[in-house]
Structure formats: C-alpha cells, structure tokens
Length: 263
Image (spheres, rainbow, N blue to C red):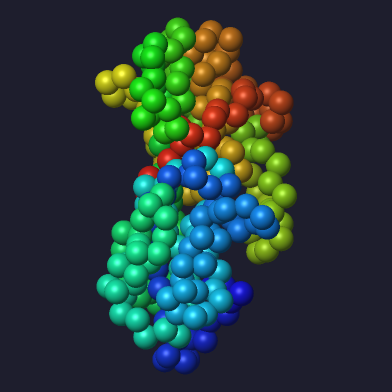
C-alpha cells in the first residue's frame, strides 16, 4: 500500500487529501491496521480503494486504542483520483459503516502530514457518577458510582501541566522507535482539568503530544487520589519516579475521546 510518504509533489496529478472524521471506537480493534481484525485505518483504506481503485494506507494524527473514540480525528492520504473533495465526503460515508463518519475532506499541501504536522491534541475522558448507568451510555463512559473526592482530583490535575517527563504514565509501545519519532518521554501539557457536568465528571487535557495509554494512566492515577489511596502531592512524586509502577492503573478505553487536533 502507498502511504503519505510516497508523495510526488512535482506531479500535479497527485493530491494530498486531509480528512476529518469521527468514529465509535467500540466497533474497532483500534486505529492501526492489523491482520484478521477490524480497525479504523483498515476500514478507511478499503473504502478509499473502492472509490479510487488505489491501494493506499491513510495516515492518522495518532493511533487510538481499541474502544477509544474520536470526535475529530485527522488523516491524510495521497491519491491520483480526480474525484472532487466534496464528493469524497458523500462517497466515503456511503461505503463506511455507521460507526465511522467523514466530516470534511480538503486538499492539503504536499508536505502536510496528519501526524508529523500536528502541533497539539486535546483528549477528553468521561466518568459517569450516578448509581445506574443508562445502557445507551455504557460504551461511552467509565461508570464509577463509588465515593470520590472530586475537589482533590481537580487540584491534582494541575500538577501535570508543563513540560515534563511522563515515563511514569507511559505504557510500553512496541511501535515506538520504528520510524523517525524521538524516544523522549517528555511532553508539554498546556491544560489539564476536571469538571463536573451533570451526572459526569469529565477530564480534559491538551498537550503537544501523548504517550501510549498516557491519558488513561493519568485518569487511573487521579482516581486513586479521589479514593484517598494517594494524596494530591503524590502526583508530583509519581512524575519524578520515572517508573510506570509508581502510577495508578489504566482507566478503561470506552471513556476516552480524541476531541481535537491542531496544526
């Protein structure tokens, strides 16, 4: 398959298309194409192939895990097809399963890449706090009806703002180091907040980039603060430990959403 690295910028017949899409991650085994399982990337590659007759592998802004959702994922792919961008939206949505919707297709400069060109991302994590979770919400929140000190969790969230080493919150990523990505675990977080919204307690974090399972590991650690197992100031100690074993467990995938990608 041809990916976005196989561009021919001098060839005017080749276009680099930027696609904004939304998907229900509970239907897929994550973003990245894998053998014998249904993934978002593989599903999109198949749909594009049916329209253009080309074998392309669309490149996403990041690899969401199985069960993680996206409100505005961004992907790019290179095509020689003459199909107008506005027609791609309808054609793709006609082919794709209902769990994936293409929101916008536009032509991007040859050098634009969904992942490498990204400057910031925003993720949101939803926790449902009432005793009974409606069945229609179950796949899209973490149902946690148990006592939590939400004010302590709000205070602890601010401790991860800044340019910090997030090794303690990073799961092992077998794909890291296979390309030109740096191996540093330092990331810059510009905003980290918890907010009560009706029956939900919602975590929103914006940063330059995120490590494998980083947001879910942060949420799992903040939950321990809310339970009183950890104190607010322990979050700083965990960051300084540079050890995954120092932090809390990984929160379930279903409550996590990729909200926005900035360029």
